[in-house]
Amino acid sequence: MLESGKFEEAIQSYNKGIELDPNVPVLYFNKGIALYSMEKYSEAIECYNRTIELSPNFKDAYLNKSICLLFTNKLEEALEASNKFIELSPNEPNGYTVKGSIFVMMKKYEDALNVSEKVIAMNPNNKNILSVAYSNKGYALAWLKKPEEAIEACKKSLELFSNSIDARIAMSLAYSFLGNYEEAINWCDETIEINPNMIEAYINKSNFLVNLGRYKEAIDYCNKASELNVAQNPAHESLILTNKSVALLFENYYEESLEAVEKAIELDPKNALAYADKAYVLNMLDRYEEALVFSDKAIEIDPILAQLTVQKALHYSILIDLMNQLKRAKKPLS
Image (tube, rainbow, N blue to C red; front, top):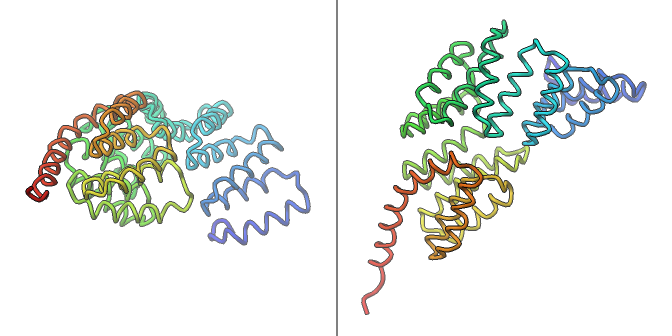
């Protein structure tokens, strides 16, 4: 039933098996796979935990658990589970590939690069695994401000698996760091064409549209991303609201912008970009001392992102000055 995609029926079948004998680990493991396929990650994790409880050396349960934890943004736990898989099976590249993805999400880009290189050196027969290793390498290189090398890594990923979503997302990121937002959007569009439910593509595209000054379109893509966030991933929703906040700011909806970015920080207190954006909004509301506090907080959380944000701020400040001039020009003469 799993192979045919009949996940609800499969779960019912496994539940009946569990009723007959609640101590068979593979029943919980297969039920976890079905739940994962339905994007019910928390329930899947419970099944993998039960599998491990019954069979502590059931290595694939650790691997699948780590992937579910990654999708629910429980990164420390995900890393712990992937390390356990590696401990039980040190010569399998799967564990290192997942670990690389976790490091990317943890913003540990040097670690992500190192573990991706390890997978590549292992030269696994599975092209999909190798493709993910190259796309993780692309992510890491992009954030390490090596976008040209990132693009080459992504091209290699696509050679191995032409429909790689991860490679396209990483490629869009690399081109954005080169300032080529139109090409970055093209890669997002390709991603959406392959998988219309790929939330990261909508999040990234909304960000790139903001950088091109296409604010209304950016808001539309933020709204689409929120609709797709069925798993209610707080990190995703925080990024969506951060992008929406910036777009609202430049559409002169200052209070709505502030409300969105405050919600973004509430959902993910480690979202450095949200703190930087809140500083912009507070600046527009003439709350300069508060703005400085949030700018410092952004730098404290993520110095690399803060450097990029400062570069953007130079352009934003010019726009803000123009906006202030327009506001003054619209005041009636006394």
